[in-house]
Length: 337
Image (cartoon, rainbow, N blue to C red; front, side, top):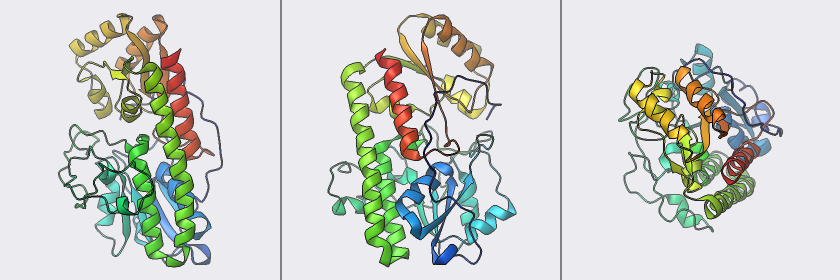
């Protein structure tokens, strides 16, 4: 990941980040709570919301200065995960350090978010078990595949992701509904006495996610087909769910994500796209960038095009639900203006 660049980041309203604490030793949290370890504070907050007071959560990646793609786990991280009852990771090569740590962990319940995405290449067609228990109809075409961690992942400079797959699934409400359910199910297996509480908490978060799906459908109804330029794949799921048309020349976003230089011809084509007058918004990752993204952003500013910057991690004091809501509202404001 290249050095972060300064951007006018869309403000994120703050709510309390519940349940995040240092994981106590001996594999159990304070007062006998379930010990949960999350790869990033996004998944840590989700687990904390579902688990409530019955869980103690520690997120390994909490700062924008830490890149999950290339993060090298410490001895402390290894001990933290070995003491976990449940591990929640993104998967898909995004946080591959978790897969390395899991190799030395025994009897740890694991939820891997990408496995609940219908776009995931390793999805082998097994129907998601959660579907038969759901009262909502979001999962009719979703599959859940069990697989060895990090299998079929291709290494890149600073990355270890699956070619052609957008691993940023936390921006896909449809997928995250299943992730929330899976966390609830795993916690219930660990602590059967808390099953009813976990299910109720999961239902509240699922309602938020269903609301986000409705919000994105609303954007599609009013602005579907509008052209957007994405400097990095991060907001891809939001843009797709909103029915927006990604006109980024092939190779630009991929190079930025990989921390590589954008080919001169691709950069020239990108600037021509920005200058065409057909792009309504430029969507960026506030945590990555370089000279090429700065050129695109400058061109967008010159053309009066709104720039919306998204982040990969929660800011201090913010919750997943509020963070997602602000991201979607910012996207709506940009493409509907």
